[in-house]
Length: 550
Image 1 (tube, helix red, strand yellow):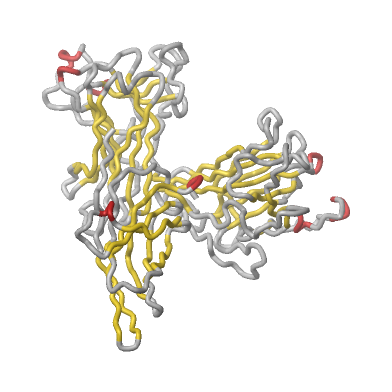
Image 2 (spheres, rainbow, N blue to C red):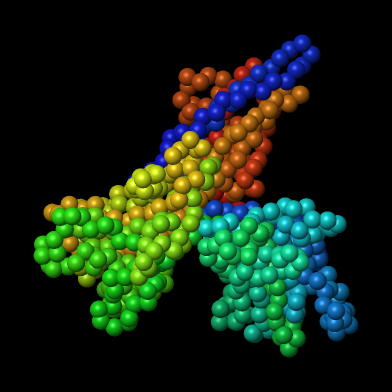
């Protein structure tokens, strides 16, 4: 696998001045991006107090508080009577607790040292959006200000378990949802997942299990397009099952570019012989070369060189890690393949449906990931190649490749054909001067093999496209006390090492490490406390992603 990256996405030289009596002190900043690989994650959206570490809960009895910063409690129903619930006031039905390291109760995979508790009582819950009022606040602080963007998909993940101290009743339910507010400020659910407490699922209450809510690609016509994102976690149990506590932790929200029919589940393939079809919804087949002659390829017409197949559960051919129950096949024949952009015509369509409507945004980096294996029924020849690429169309509608990865079929790499392997191509942060800035995103998966190696099939699945905020040091400011502050923007949750030098002739690996920072929200300021230098240059290296992507 070849990762296409740039050694230097942008170079910016800034200078800052501050006056100390008659003296002037100057510092220079060079913003560089290192070229080493980091793990690819979906674009993370900052969720304030996602791990419920605030407020700090005392580490002594009762190890809990009814307070949760940033999250607002669901409103008390008009008919709620504390006397019918052991005298418990409504505000005490949710809160934060310390993960006490007692045997049998300590949650082993908690993020941080605290989590939230939520009583299994109808309507008890917490929510957060741009206008919610969390904790002891008297007004919204607008910390959570993300919006639903057209062309993007959203995934909410929440860690859950049942309390060991106050057990839930079998069949108790909890709802996780993503919502927006209508013009009347009413909460309108966009997508939801209902979680049922079942001891056959929650077999170990000392371990958190992840549950997800997914919103597919946002369309311009969707009423939530452009609206603020809201998250709600609420008990939906009946009074019959009321009681006990849910333990809630590590709320994660990610944004990715929506790729229509990314898992090739459409059209539905008949689960009978031949278990395949030459149709692939949303994806357009690459054009037939003028010199293609079916008689030279076992009488196969060009349109049958790609298609969709059902993952038949037969020994030695069933793909165990497929997303869904279908995948695509691409014949290893020169130029056979699939592509998708805003104007492609997929499946039985006679005109573009514009389903892939995302564009290359300035300041964003993009990574395309595709799961691949070779067919066990029609084996590939070693040395056969496939190209994955991101492209745009120029003014004449020609495909212009921005970045590409060539995958070579090698039995030392593809050691088990019943397992898909991920291959990726990345392009660095889009600059305003790039010709593809603002242009529609295009994806192509095409066989680049020679006629010598022609034959056999690639199995293709789970096409993912992620945009992340490219590292940038847009400005720096010298302070009155002689320190220097760097303003860094980048992917929320990413960790950065700040390096400095007074000698630009030194290679970067010989620069001095000034510290490591975690860019929690996407914007962060680093302060160099050294005050005795007349000049210093800086670089920021992305080291990876902090724990659990937050």
